[in-house]
Length: 141
Image (cartoon, rainbow, N blue to C red; front, side, top):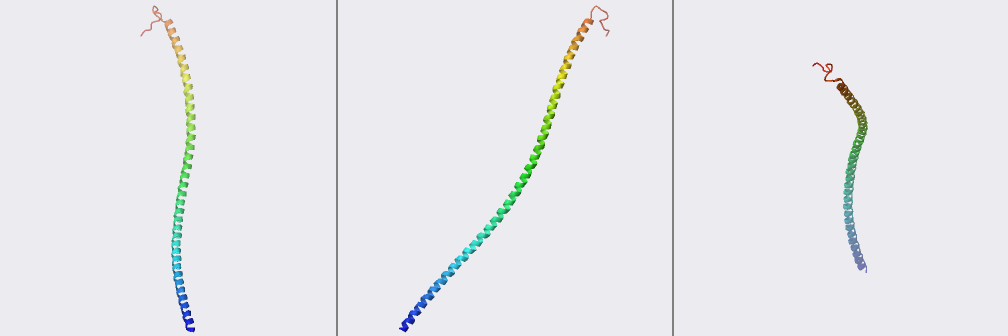
């Protein structure tokens, strides 16, 4: 029985060795898969970091552009405010000119009325002074 027990032990040892070998192969394959996954993860992390850097650079560029546009809008606002003030001054000046023009129109109308009265009076006086039969009424020309 000893020989059969030795044979039995040898068979068990062979099966155990084969089982251990298969487990080692399986572990190596698992480790290779884990290494590939870790390499892929590292590459994905590197790509993610690169994308984040690019996004940050783009956000900085956009922020600079927004700041520039904001500054320009402030300048435009200031210019428009100045133009509004200038427009108000021009409007006031135009109003003053229109007022003066109205006053001038009233004065010209008044002078015209006075001249019409004076011309009519002069014509009446001239007609009264002119007597065709009188030697004084004729002017020597």
